[in-house]
Image 1: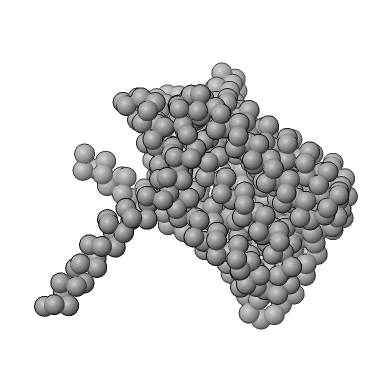
Image 2: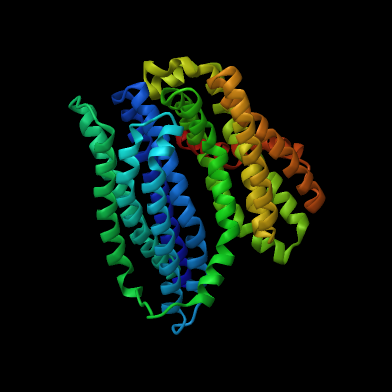
Length: 451
């Protein structure tokens, strides 16, 4: 039991460090890059990053969770077969994406109204190949309940990219966009080598074509892949359509507002990681009533954390934009206000997916995400055409409201959830927080002062 406790403490600490490093380097890179690049260049970089995120999800969504699940519980005899099957799927997907990218990269850049992106897409093929190995090594390490290599490899990649951007900012060096891709290639190569050495003790491949294991991996991963892909498309289609319909600069302006929303979303993601294992466990031991409470309570806690910050940003959007992105993007205040409105719905949607996945209803989650993504796509086209950049924000708001309504109907039917209970728990959070954390410390301070 002592060893098990050490495992949880150690792995939990490493995961917290990784999340912290990811936020620190990710936002740091954005903070300086948005000040170095012109509006048009930053818009093109936003479109490039959005596109490659979708391509990475295409492969990772099919392989990652499935490989970790089957490998972690497999016998020593089956492990080499599973690794080989996953590697085979990895190679097939990589070859297909690289060929499609080479054949259609020019057309895609034209559709996105960014012909300069062609060379970036071609260079990305190198990154995609390197990341295929990196993902495989990280998954194999995780399946063996080790996380250090995942943390080190990902942190080194982000640190290399951040260091280059910071160097260019400090010395006022102009950055051609292909230089950023070259830095990504270098960082991916270093990260892949690091991941290999951490995963090396567990790398045991078998010779052959293991169709049965390939089908098992694919069948398990297809719904997780579909959910991830639909979710990514729902969150990025607005930026891609802005570039294609208006100009890359429009995508950059919108991305600045989205970056701020993503920062606010951090507690939602953290709570989802906590709730998933808890809800799966409670479903087995305590039944649906406990799941209902867990959903309402967790959403309420997130709302209590978010609402004060949302109110402040809503009142002073221009100030926040100036502090985080400089004076080039202070005209995005009205866009930021609209994005803040649907930020309130994000905790409901994220915890909906977490709860339903934990009780075995992954198909339902998948269908809801697909409906929301499709609605977002259609609304974005018409709204951007008619009212410009802010149309993307309104389209995303409306599609999120539709997804929220459908999700709450399902939760009410399955678990008896009442969404307004979450606001009650949010209101109760503040006196509870005061009683548990603030008041004892205040009493200790008063007692010490008397002495």
